[in-house]
Amino acid sequence: MITGRDIIVIGIQAWDIEIGSNCKNIAVEMAKNNRVLYVNQPLDRKSQYAEKNTDKVRLRKAVLRGEQAALKKEMDNFWVLNPRTLIESNNWLPDGPLFDWLNRINNNRFAEAIKPALEELKFKDFIIFNDSSMFLGLFQKELLKPDLYIYYMRDYLTKNPYWKKHGVRIEPKLIAKADVVCNNSTLYTEYGLKYNSHSYMVGQGCEVDDFNDDIKDIKVAEDLVEFDKPIIGYVGFLSSRRLSINLLEELAELETKWTFIFVGPEDENFKESRLHQMQNVHFLGSRNPEELPGYIKGFTVCLNPQQVNDATIGNYPRKIDEYLAMGKPTVASSTKAMEYFSDYTYLGVTAEDYQKLIQLALDEDSEEKQKGRKDFARSHTWANNVKSIFEAAENSEK
Image (cartoon, rainbow, N blue to C red; front, side):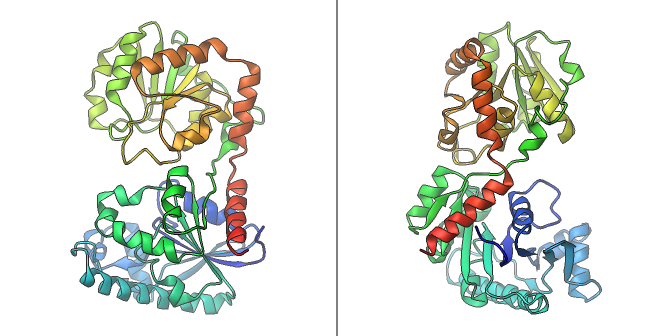
């Protein structure tokens, strides 16, 4: 276990991002036994104009002008750096030498903006933990000269149009030069192994205590009481890119005696789907995060009916941990990432599969099965996730 070290965290999610972040959770956990410098991405030339009215850009401009300190202590052993530099917006360029030239300039500026903070904090023999920053992170091993360089993959970014343009060529180079590659899914681990023999599956952390009914007095959400059981439920953003509307429509038609409950905001395709005309399907809208355990507790069986596409095939579904942490039988789409959960979930492809598997889950649920699901999911803490990352790092040094 790595303790008493200095760690630089770089990535694609800023400390002041408004959504949950794996990188932030991992960094905070690392800081319990190490010193951590969390480095936000620098302001780029396009964003300084396009997003000039956002608080994020205003702060970074103030840092550039010297009106705000670049380095701020957030908590014990933990500092956040807004680099005092401006980088060029280069993703619009065709893939090739001109992009590479500007990307090298950006890497140099980034590294030079980090160095004063390292001197101020007296960081020595430090580790770099890079959360998926394949462009700005490409040359930091050479420029900052860390003792250890960890590249962390948690999304199939090269399938995203923004990253795909240059990332298909760039990311393998970064994977190859990293000392260790950590991944939260078996798909990414296999991808990493193509370029680096030190590619490890480290799993995923989750706020499992929020879904632990044994230590919290979680009550079933009041607005579930009126619905007939069994309740087949889903919580989360209802995105037609990630979830199969067709599968859900077919399933709801196959089993009209089951009640289907969806908790979360919908995209336009979901709003316009036939699901809204079905008598056994109910959309309850958005709820605050702290309310979600009460809904999951009220479900008889939980669902994760993913589309199988580039956006979902490798993603670690934190939602599954939340369902299982409450002991709930869970039926989900069969993807590469879901193989990790196969002993504790029911995996299918078609609406007919889902129908049979939900019925099986209803028939064979037991206290023993519930305990197995809870124990499995509750092992996926951020502490255990960071422990796995550090063990992978130590293995790479042997």
